[in-house]
Length: 470
Image (cartoon, rainbow, N blue to C red; front, side, top):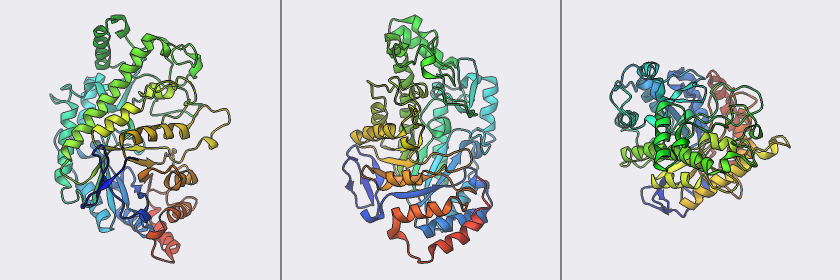
């Protein structure tokens, strides 16, 4: 990490000017947050309150509160209903916990939380506002980055609509800002991550393929065509790579991304992949700079999430990263420019997958979450970008890996400022999971525990909290 200068108001300032809320003391360690259920604003308050009490007794810093565009601005542009989230924030505040608010401009499949109704209606008439794959399938869980500056939402640009949403949140939660609300994440794409939706939301159980490029909506194709013309190669702008893979195709079964002799190593390949990744980074810059401007007056840490596309990382072409939008290969660092963009916008980076490990993968797997995490963290170090950790989820809840998580929190290479553990719910509080989570927290945060009978108290709270659905 970059050296931090501690200010009198309790913030640490990285060398690039990034503000991060400092830990109260070295003994306190990493700030630990637990994610609330995605639909927490609609949950039974008794179960939520019981879960919050259990987390407070454990000595955790706070909770991550997902706030969905589709629930707040549901019926009409500019018509905001913050009531459910305000009630939830007050419950967290009363429990003595802090809030990491995640502002989500995407939809969720499970639980079902769609985009605002009025946005979906516009999308039915103008489907090119959504990411599109080669076969014409639309990804309707978030807007295409190509429409950021286009007046496609009833005469307004998505960036303008996002800005008004951020401003409304700031106004509605003004009494929480900088006190209870210490961190704000801003959604950057599918599932809130800075990436293209290179895999369909309903993935099968078959072996992971390399994914597909998502550059076939009208607006991205227009952008590609103009870019190709500006470089003197108009034929390169007629569409995506002709020999690119389909979603579940293996890396060496297609011409573009195969390890040796693939088109990715040709001048055309460099042209396309540079353009594709630049579009993604530029989108991140637009959204994060907007959020940085809106929340600059408050002592909060602004964050964005970058995915851990670790499948096939050991291949020369890094195919899964390429289709997700990261031009990272055996000879090119695709994350340095991403970290630099975060630094310039004074943002921390959230990295998921910290409960994954190479040793738990098949022997012949070419995936490597360990190496990819190390590469991204090194890029963040170079640019003074604070790193927040997060675990990955299975279809039913936490997927284990508590030992791996603890290693990231306590190991020799530990560089985390905060950790977001996902996610509170029935599985989280189950007898199969919660005791192990308690032991991990104790090992990481022992100085915060004050009660000798803590496990007994936690079980009582967990019995009630287990009534939460995921």
